[in-house]
Image (cartoon, rainbow, N blue to C red):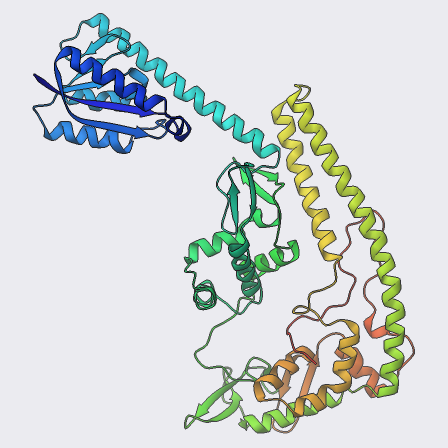
Length: 507
């Protein structure tokens, strides 16, 4: 009795779950072995697509036949069940085996007739053509799916595939983690490594630096995705705002990435030397005393050293120059309230214009897609126009995002700016050096230091407030808060609400 192995395969998980193909193949091959007096040594079954070589159990069978010289016979249903690439055919031919194609009634071996080999070769070519055609159809189907706004692949982290509805939905727990990833990195205080560690401490999740970078750069979280190098608008739900996404990209690709030091000193980075323009650095003496001095980068400097307490007292004086009297503060706030109502009306009108444009662009995209399906336009023409419309859609969405109220961690509105100017010095006196430095960074760009005085450079609009304080030029209008004029009806507007970057200090 001759020894033989059986090889059976289904081309998809769906076929295996249906329960037809594998049992039918095994029944056919076992009956064939019984009729021809073959002893089945082992059965190899693959349940996966076979568009490329390297199937798990096919490889196991090849390895088994290479070691067991007493087994040379392979029983298989038909050609496309055994192999679909020329490489698989060459691999089995090198084993000098005997292949029984039961349904096709062929036996292929080294000694087979040339006619049988010719027919077998033709069947192999047809099988190859079948898989190539199948691959093309699958790619075409995925492109059509993507054009309809449905992501054809596996949902990224933060989402999950709904197998019943064949849609993509938000994963409740993972979406919170993704949101935390974006918010932490947008603060500019984390490298990818630091973000990874902070995430592990906060959530217990360990995510690689490379995958964190992929998450932070993925457009999927703002409602778009790439498929085949083409950008598509997805219809999946979005939980990351476009504004937050753009802030993350600015941190990733900007030149203002944070520098990480072993020791942090409150006022370092805020000061420069008035004599030579060098930075004022800090050093710790005897493990507890902090001194500030010129770096001396351009040579020996006569600016003396200052203790941290001396520096804190001197810096506090610059806040006195932006003090707004209580009665003036009330008048300005009333004027700002009136201006704010007017601006809200203007922004509402701009938002309505943008929303109408967005509807129009999306309608053109949908109509063009239907024209493509009906054959009225070519796919190349459709893809070229879709690229332009996607870019226009993104610009409109970005403009709509900028029309929203600024988030608390990025901006202080005009009322809080005025309140800060009114209370800055009294707040400063009650804070620790680190908190004092945070408050100063809201108000100052930098401050030049010499042996006896400070020369502050204020941020906008505190520079205007300081000038008004010195000249006593207060009016009933909040001119210090005037932003750019409202955008024209046809333009993409920016945010008209005044902003102050650089801190998150709370009154």
